[in-house]
Image (cartoon, rainbow, N blue to C red; front, top):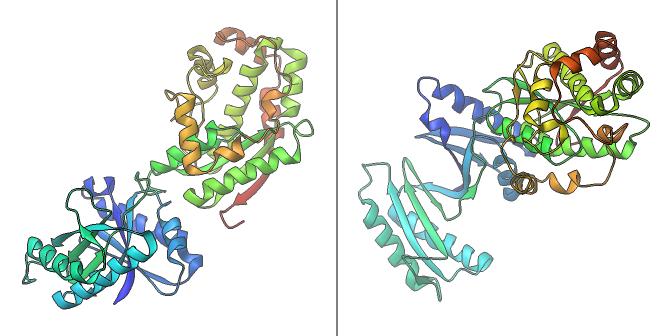
Length: 391
């Protein structure tokens, strides 16, 4: 008898001839997320993935694994011989553990016979196991409608006994849909946007714009912490820290005040695209939501899109702020995002930013600036840090 984790995936099961590619990528991602916890054997059988471990902290293993995109649930289970007497004894032991740990009072048994050579059919297994547990588990009662605990008996080459299903986030394995550069601010939205794209299999690099010394070291630490949280889902993330202040000064001196936000945004996009192309990335990712701020009108987004040739993914585009906050809380970024440290967008903030910019006027203003020179200088002086969840 040994303890294993049963890992279930969802959308991957719908894949066709390339299904094995997604499965193998998922297994590698699981390995990557738990490798520092000690040796574990990961194997696939009949549409499920099993993680057999020895001595590691079970809760820590589960916490790491459920963060791997592509996984819909994880169950800690006992793996035993497919023998009815052993199944009954193990199910009773498991029931007693749950009574002690979680104070469960009612139960039922659900069985699945994957091995058709096993001499008992699924309903018979459930009846036999339930009848064995009931008189031996103290005050535990049967409730077939709304039980506190469902004991699952899954009979394959081996038998598996479990009663918990810890939900994962689903999606597709990271690294199956190319790479993107996330424009990462210190706010609520952009970390959520990066997480959502990673959930669709996109590997993440990040660029953060600051205006040092107008923005502080504390603001930088905030962004580093947000990146660490994302890295717990996405693996190591290369973070590019770009000082936008010289560009903002040029815009402030030479362009209309109301265009400061939109022109700064176009520079962010252009620099992000340059970083993307230099690092083999296929898209830009932003946390923009339609109408949320002055630069996120349809006209504003059209003008910022025009600055680059790469596709720009905006997974939050139609979400309300309440929806975005809910996701931020779920993934653990919200409390960091609301820390009151300044960001580059507060520097030279116009009193009345243009909300319906016209591309002709914006391009005319950019002609007053040495755009390529400013971009190159920003990239030359940027700081690059590789962030992982362990840091």
